Amino acid sequence: MSSPLHELSIDSIRAGLLAKKFSAEELTQQSLAYAEAENPQTNAYLTLSPERALAAARAVDAKIAGGEDPGPLAGVPIAVKDVIVTRGLRTTCGSRLLANYVPPYDATAVIRLEQAGGVIIGKTNCDEFAMGSSNENSAFGPVRNPVALDRVPGGSSGGSAAVVAQGTALVSLGSDTGGSIRQPASFCGISGVTPTYGRVSRYGLTAFASSLDHIGPFGKTTRDAARLLEVIAGHDTMDATSASAPVPNYTAALDGKVKGIKLGLPREYFEGLASETADLVMAAVEELKKLGCEVRDVQLPHTSYAVAAYYIIATAEASANLARYDGVRYTTRSASANTLSDMYRQTRDEGFGDECKRRIMLGTYVLSAGYYDAYYLKAQKTRRLITQDFEKAFEQVDAIVAPVSPFPAFKLGEKVKDPISMYLSDIYTITGSLAGIPCMSVPCGLTAGGLPVGLQILTRHFNETTMFRIADAYEKASN
Amino acid sequence: MKITEQEVRRVADLANLALRDDEVARMAHDLDGILTHIDKLNELDTTNVEPMAQVLFDAEETATLREDQERPTLTNAEAVGNAAVTGGGYYKVPRVIER
Image (cartoon, rainbow over all chains, first blue to last red; front, side, top):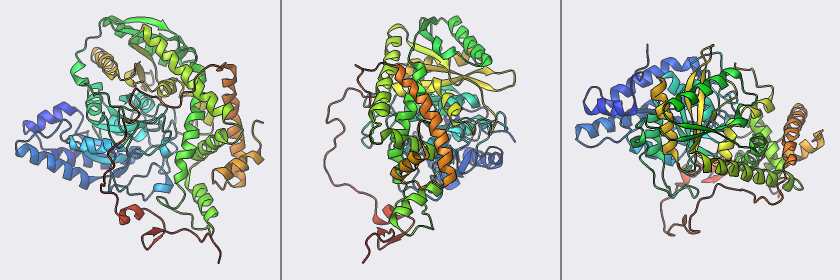
């Protein structure tokens, strides 16, 4: 059995539907059957949603039959990370605590993609509350990388990356706080986009670290990811941090022309990099040079402080955000507690996995009396320095090109015992997250062992268009 | 050691986590490693640096305020629908006040 989506794109599905080559219901049925057959291999879906998907598909077919515009995502099978709420459809956040949680409302991004004709076929596995870089922190078991089943898909949006690589969904939504879209995209060999902070409403995204959380798209191609972002981006009155800047037509800019675009190469990102990854990233930079890009060195001197700053800020915010999981309103409750205090404490001890506990503890510690200035304030000041590094670099160049991860997908179990080395591997993605700038991963080849490597492209706030233009031109030239 | 087991227990208390004894030892070890790495920030002179709490963009202070109008909210059944224990439309918790 091969993927029914293998040769398709968002635009070709819409064209096929309008030309009556197939119906949305047929494509949905096939995608659901394929997802059901393939999922035992990867464990990428936690929940399939056939009823919701078929209802959405039939609505698209009815619109077409009635001569109405079925929308830019008409009939597209889409998977949604299980930290993004879906009304009436179980949303677990990869946590035991929310194993039976059925949200009473839809996230704004979900509403927008369904209004555009998109078909949600299921919810994807992820690290618990999006905390992790390997998808091994899910209470529902790890996800396996469809490219190499003995390896991790990356995290935390591992399931959302795996389903697109596997062809069980055409595109998907993930969330990114410190690299949780870009790193799994690079591990699974697809495109993954972290838009500008505030570009996509987080209403209905389960909060992890509110000053860093983003929703963003995955696609087999940059064009599909850009198309999906066009639909979900834009101001939302339900999210006070959502940006009001108009959303450009990203896909209209994908003309393959990158001549004269100035690219910056940050030397700090190549120190201590596994040589195969460095070679592939540099080969991609050479390809972009051939297409007419100008490449120069830039400096991002505070890069080596990013992991420390990030793990203070993210865990501090997480310790506050995760306080709501206390056994009262949403979650399962410890059966053994007899007092209110024990109910909180035991529910949380039994419910949270090790990584969540570690981060709640670190976040609580850095915010506790006497430590605020030494840790949290220091980290916020460091965040400013890292952001200023990018501002200075973008005075000289239009975009920065860099690796995504120091190494390709590693084996399941290889790094679980060493949380610090796992944290340090987020170094190249955390910087862009702290600055809130748009950044993405686009595939740039395979290692000798056949593992995908990603090229990271970072641009100024709200300049997704230039980022997509570069990624798309590279993609076309390298195919 | 950057953090003792005693401190771990104090922080766990603040965070409402009932860590088991084996968890306390492991947590002390893990946090110690992370805090040691975090010490790297002390190399930086941040004396005159403005802290960055948010990625902020230009907007009027009132940009996110809406009209104060009635609008539909969740029903009571929806609001309590995911709670572990409810009664009479309320969340139920273990008794707090002894009679």
